Length: 389
Image (tube, rainbow, N blue to C red; front, side):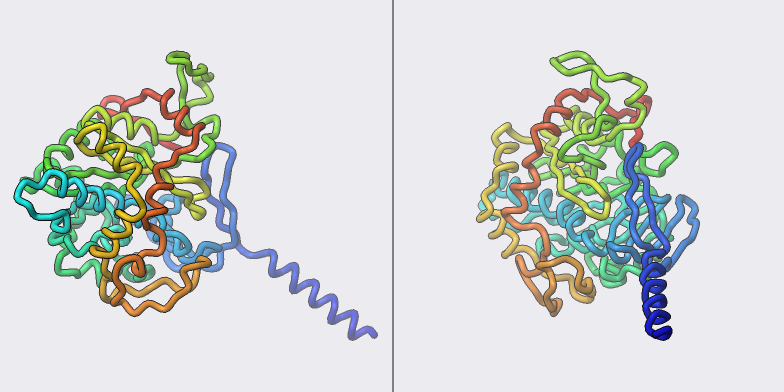
């Protein structure tokens, strides 16, 4: 009898110990934290620019810089496919519209520039497009690149870093675009959030966007950037609102920390004919995430982008997308993507998230978010930067 009671006690103790794991917490917004089990710390270092960590949590292996999740095994493909494929697909369509020599849209885009992208997953997605002939990626922090190659090979690893179409440059993306004589079909900015004292703030300014517009191919050039938090129901702190244009004034004191989704869109709209916002849920970020695509063209072009039929997108995916040889696949993570991969897949079999139906959903912003965007008139310049939480 005593032995049975002792066994029960041991089981209870073991049960409670299992609950007492190390925890990973991350500030998401003022008063809001993301908290989860921390299974292991695989790497931690301090580079010239930032603290770099790779940890294993509820969301699998995760890259963290300066205390902020950059991407996680569970859903990194959602972020990177959303960042890359809409602008490359749209560049192809624009090329077909503006092509006078009778060739079709399969030929574009051929040249792509990535600013940032040290994880190599953005480059992985670009290289899946069989029309791409040249990819230039410029990231300022070699530590991030090497750490990701070692601990996160599924993001791209050596197979992407050493790809024959890829020119990987350790350097300043701002300086590179300011000095380059090349032109690109697509420019992708996969950079750190615009936080005070962060390395990426100059890449979110009107001055930089003007220069980016000058190095885009005028026929089918598309610019895209990650744009930070963009929740379906915006929290009170997210958008500083002034009492004009039917908007309700907020207390300025409560708006010291805010999102940059609208200012990025507003700033791009001063340079390009169109700056189109879109969003996707990111569980590992603890919030919905925003992107802004910018290009020149007619009002009809903007409507077409947002309303592309699933059949058109799916057809382009089928004819253009190919697996990048040598990139290992993630182990089982999300329901619905548990399948063996050979590395020779084509079309929709290569992508886990993006397709025609997903494309339409990306541009369907909530009524509350659209209203908040309309009331936020801020523009980001070198003299007047805006920082996010």
